[in-house]
Image (cartoon, rainbow, N blue to C red; front, top):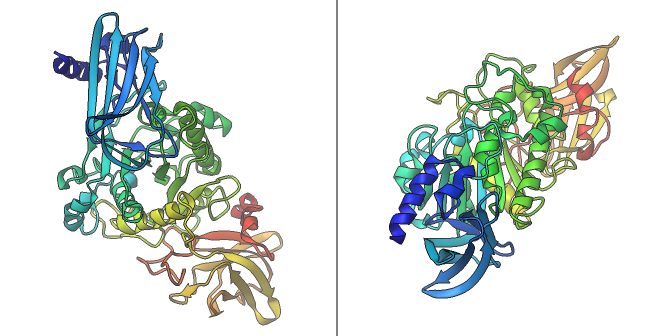
Length: 525
């Protein structure tokens, strides 16, 4: 009878909204299931669900039929929900989680088995995050490479939207699972997210303990759909009429409400994000506010929802947009979105985006992608660069995770040169005549002119500025939709193959912190 009740409860939970949970009976939240990964120490994992108001719920963590811990709580009205926070657990497993509801003389028991403790990462965004392993380079080989990664568990959230914040997910496309070739490549733009999976796989190679990956993404969606009303209001984003550029839901907050907020009780290690293409021509000039605001709001919400177990400033990684063919010039919106993704600093972490990390992807272009050049197939390099950032920012490793940026600029007008000193060593892979540009101004009229790369050393690079016979005001690098061919940008870090990020700056002797100063005026030149 208990098993039948459990099955009946699960079926009804798919049919009824969360606020009808009092009628459903006793159940776990939708994403608490067999094969799940719970966040390891030093945080405590949150276990929650629904039941009969006033009932007592006892949650027991077991291993090999031995009780590790017990937590007791009650079902609260009017939400008919219950929640416990487990004591911190070391990475490993498997464990069994047992929840028992007692109400008068009635007892109901739920169990989930093969539960691991490790680090839990949420992966979100639009189509480049949604692309599955079957869509990327070397798909056959990648799909078969699962045997060594059975402790990397995956979950895919169903596509759903809502006008109000939901407390639980409306549906799950892929329940917590061990990776297989079938669930890693279940159709195009379905599940499992290639960037998410590969990121987790690289992390597991380093960490050697369980990793849980939750994919919640939807193609063709702007950041406004993933943002709460609170964060949008903080940036002055109006309620708007969707443009033709989006192919997915674009109304304010509808995906935040249905696909992110329902996860906010979960204890997380961090988030990775791949989005921005749908904002190239839509609220682009607000992105330097909406993206940092989204990060801050997600952090606040997950910290509160997990009873303080998810770190207040949990690590947040993202992919700076790659290149795609649009027939546009450097005045197109793509370079501006790349810049706005860093809150106009050019690098992360920074003062407005603390504890963040970025994978530069402008050199991972794919003009022959069968899914369109906006969907490059090299997700392995994207995930590898992301995992380097995670190792540095989230796990405190001392390693290089971002390509070189100028630290100092010196104008040598008598020699017709602008000398750039970089914060790291540089590898000049090739000398390019157009990828650097200078703003040349006369009579309040300015134009961008090429500044060919000239001499260089291990940490300096000179630009030929003889094309400008007037006042030199600013310099920029890789400020175009398609700055270079695949892995052929001119500048990289010599040991890590990380490309130098795009930047724009006034010409003064400035350190990177000042790359952002006057950026708005500068972009308008």
